[in-house]
Image 1 (tube, rainbow, N blue to C red):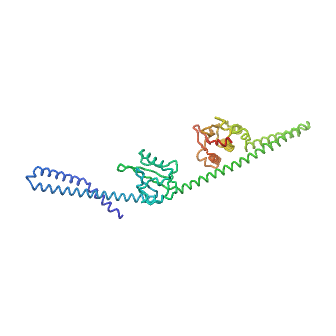
Image 2: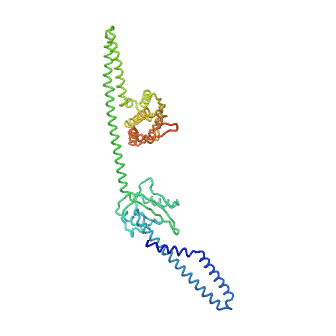
Length: 436
């Protein structure tokens, strides 16, 4: 409230000075004075009193004009100084460091936050080169960047959108920053203003978070690998040992059936039931073994295992499944862990199709792309919405996404134009591991 009075009076004075009546009166007086000067010039020798009067009026008008102009200049100077003081106060109260440099990249403005960030007093910073606040490896590139920015004519933009910027404290410590730059021209000279923020704490937190995510992915991958190893071991046991014992039982049962009395129909019927039960047991053992770990994935590779998986899915669900392979040789020699991850992703996707989609057809496509492998599983069912992905049953999809993120790949879910769901997996192939 205390500062509102002078501002209001100033506004009143300015409004009063621009009043149309006053402007008209001043114009009329000047015109009248001009007319008197013309008359005095023509009749000055005949009317000395007129000449004297006009000269006095001219002196008064000229003096008033000089006084008014001087006052206006002083008032403008005062306002400029007040605005500069207000601007300096705002700049110094900013929480971010603010630096302004000229075309030679000499510091001409350095606020209090910059003193704190860089550990340099303002008096020492002003007039010095901006390069003192940059690590030596960035100085040449930064100068070229500033010059290029000046040629663009863009008034302002963020610096280092894709990379982390680094600055240098007075004690030689480098620290990460985020910054924006703007430019302005004053009296033919170009000035650049940089507003920057020390993001050391945030970068440490981000780095720690990324490290934790990487550790969790590695732990999750190791758990999955251990589970796959255990499944492989159990599948081998079922296929080899249990399969051999069941085969021996079939042979023994066939031997016994051949020696049963032909007239005892009840015993023969019981032997037939035992033979059928034994066949079902053998089939169940093979199915469980294949579900745990298809041996052809290790013996014949991913391409053959995927073909078998699609055929088995179509046989069990009654949903036709078409497999397309472009450059199937790209699937040969993949690392075991990656082949297993791709196989499990296709298996999980087909299981979801059978359980939830109501689809009539399924397409599975494998292709080599940009040094990696791309897999698409698409159906023509009811589709999947964003709300479905939040349900508990979508944990399998979340697990697959995390697993392929561990390999440096990605998993995307979308809806094709014809409806249904499309799951696209893109994963790079580590060639060194593949050759090993």
